[in-house]
Amino acid sequence: GENVEQHPSTLSVQEGDSAVIKCTYSDSASNYFPWYKQELGKRPQLIIDIRSNVGEKKDQRIAVTLNKTAKHFSLHITETQPEDSAVYFCAATDSWGKLQFGAGTQVVVTP
Amino acid sequence: DTGVSQDPRHKITKRGQNVTFRCDPISEHNRLYWYRQTLGQGPEFLTYFQNEAQLEKSRLLSDRFSAERPKGSFSTLEIQRTEQGDSAMYLCASSLGDSSYGYTFGSGTRLTVV
Image 1 (cartoon, one colour):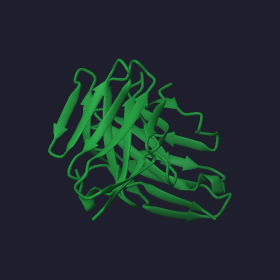
Image 2 (tube, each protein chain N blue to C red; image 1 turned 90 degrees about the vertical axis):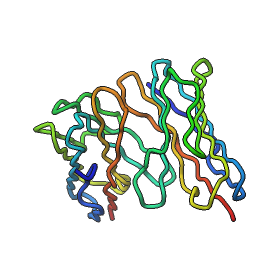
Image 3 (cartoon, rainbow over the protein chains, first blue to last red; image 1 turned 135 degrees about the vertical axis):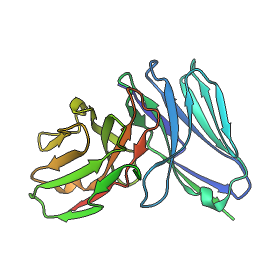
Image 4 (cartoon, each protein chain N blue to C red; image 1 turned 180 degrees about the horizontal axis):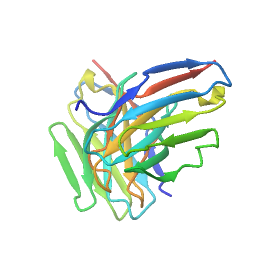
């Protein structure tokens, strides 16, 4: 089955700096890679996603890159703000089309 | 339709009791998923339905767990003879079609077994 590894587990950045979170996956059939943001006590919220036929996607300060050959994808947050502090999860579809999640990255943005 | 709804939001139960959670997906979504999330971890897949058919169950889903989606709309997840290790957030999500595009989570049911 699909196995998604996520690094780092915690990330502290100064406000205004960039944050990068990396994930790897094992199932070559994976074709959809979303990223979720989860604030304490709340549900995971989709922030950006990418499909396997695209190498990069950007939405304002957030971007995701995908390297299918190497089976890894990354989330980039530029010009970080205190409200970006949260836990971020990467995910990848398995061969059944359901999502498997990484263990999460706690991002702390300090003013 | 305001999204995926879960009920109750919180449940405290004594060890050995049975509990049942409900999930109402987005109305046009034919796929419904159950996940479990413990503190500091990502959501772990439990089971999912396409319409009323239960297509897969994780090995995490012991015999004490059962899920139903009788009419292809709402779903229930029952845990029998609860154990302290069952304490977690139980998340429901739904999506349209046979892909994960538009996967939307509910707010979850937090279970505490005392």
